[in-house]
Image (cartoon, rainbow, N blue to C red; front, side, top):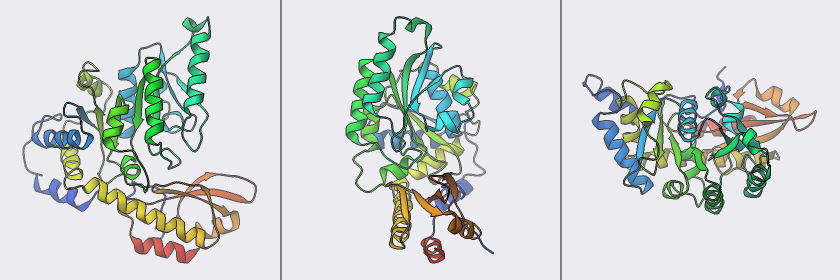
Length: 343
């Protein structure tokens, strides 16, 4: 019996256009470590998309590596990074940030997001403490967009976080593992140029948005970090065959492909949500992106789990479970319709 898979958004391989181009260049001899022509054209296309002609762009192997490299690069040894308690670096990266010597300073999450007033309270408490020299200094704010709950920051919220970071001499870093789905969401006012304006660093996710693997780390202010290339290699995130990454991002940022395939995933998720709601199911949280969180009776969950793959999220009470259904750039509409028939 075939299982319908909605467990995550990186269960498929890569967009066919990427596979086609990789096959075409398979026997080419390219310069190593990202100094090839495909990486350079990809960098230029990303700079244009971000509206920052001089931005530095690096291609790394995966999301955890990118987070670790970026956070370590910006923080002094005595500094920590502020994140939501549900933030990916705090929950699902196996202590990668702590392994680099940096404490994660957590704030409460509100639909996966942090609030400016609570960030300010944390900072004011730190700087009013006479014993702060004995404490970990907050040196960076980490956010993800979309968050672990599929929610999005607004342009206004990003600008407020930027102002707070400027006031307290902190860096603002955005984890964009699913950034394409955030940019394609209905009603969002956040764009790549705005992210580049507000953030000291961010990455554009490829692994979950059409690539075989890889992420593009963007530093809008060139020269901000010394020896970034060396840092990436030292932390094991540099591919010798860098053109495999460059070609993928060159493809994704040609003719709007990254945005188009992201928009498809959002449309499929919206159809899924409508179908659940029409059948009387309740959503755990309202999300505009490709992750949908549904409250299921445990009896329904047991039956559905034999036919559908999804992700357990949490237990709101003894008789119900919150589960996540994730669509992707490759989700087939017919599979969404089959899922809705099963419920």
